[in-house]
Amino acid sequence: MSHQLEHLRGQVDEINTKLLELLSQRAELVRAIGDVKKKQGINRFDPVRERDMLDQIVGKNPGPFDDDTVRHLFKQIFKASLDLQKQNHKKVLLVSRKRHPEDTVVMVGDEPVGDGKRTIVAGPCSVESEEQVRQVAQSLKKQGIRLLRGGAFKPRTSPYDFQGMGEEGLQMLRKAADEYDLKVISEIVNPSDMEMAERYVDVIQIGARNMQNFELLKAAGSVRRPVFLKRGMSATVEEFLFAAEYIVSRGNTQVMLCERGIRTYEKWTRNTLDISAVPLLKQESHLPVFVDITHSTGRRDIQRPVAKAALAAGADGIMLEVHPDPSVALSDANQQIDIPQFETFMEDMRVTGLIKPAKTTTG
Ligand SMILES: O=C(O)C(=O)C[C@]1(C(=O)O)C=C[C@@H](O)C=C1
Image (tube, rainbow, N blue to C red):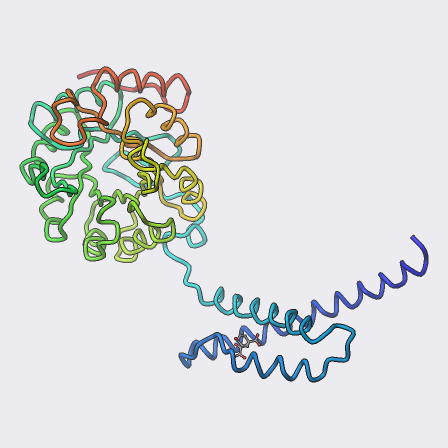
């Protein structure tokens, strides 16, 4: 490099440093302005002030930059300043990892979830009979799985479809779970049912259709049971986290998140599994993250690779539907797997090393 070029660059370096110092000083002042504005309830963005400043600056423009370029450069500074003011006042959510860097381990009775081992939640879409639930519970026990799911209150698209067995269904789930030392997870759709649900279930599920039912979320925030919150079918990841915040901000910190596919134009799957939501949720939040492989795909033939993808992407667990005879199921007959298929599925998961071998084989 010639001496002359070196010298000129040296001068530019010095100016860069000065500019940065000045920009940082400006940023501190702007931050302080932001605080004052917040206290006084004034809008952060002030186009009139920006226009005045630009006019003043351009009026003093000595060149060689033309006025438009100067305007553009300063507009970038105003924009960055505005962002800084916003950042300063953006509330850090309770569900955020910024607030709580360690993973939350949710205790479902004596069963930890989110502690590093992968958790499987399985069971029929709907509770249909004592025998049906019992058969599935027995199969879970054989696989060393502790969390039994089953729908008793079914929010269905059509009002003419099976609506679930209600409290009687919860009783059946409890009975089967107690027989095989399992934990019950079931969806509650009405805030006034929370108290009743606490008698039968170990985990309250909030379904996709209710993810933004704020009264239900508040009610779930007040119960002494962990909550399994499913992502709404059209909810953004941010909206999903805000829904979880509703629960946690009411005092219930035991929340698990479940990605269950979102609605897109794709028709070959029931929903589109948003696999990127898994690492995003793990990054942004400290709560355990699940993937519902049944609802996200709506088909049996791709459940295994999807389960593997979910676990490889960092999910703490997966949820799937198992029915003794799916072809006669009262809901979601096309997507549930039967018990032999479930056993093969579990075997495959173990071979990959993603799921640990079953501890218990009795029952
Ligand atoms: O002066 C203000 O009210 C500010 O908030 C500061 C500032 C700036 O960067 O100068 C930032 C954003 C507003 O749109 C206008 C000006």
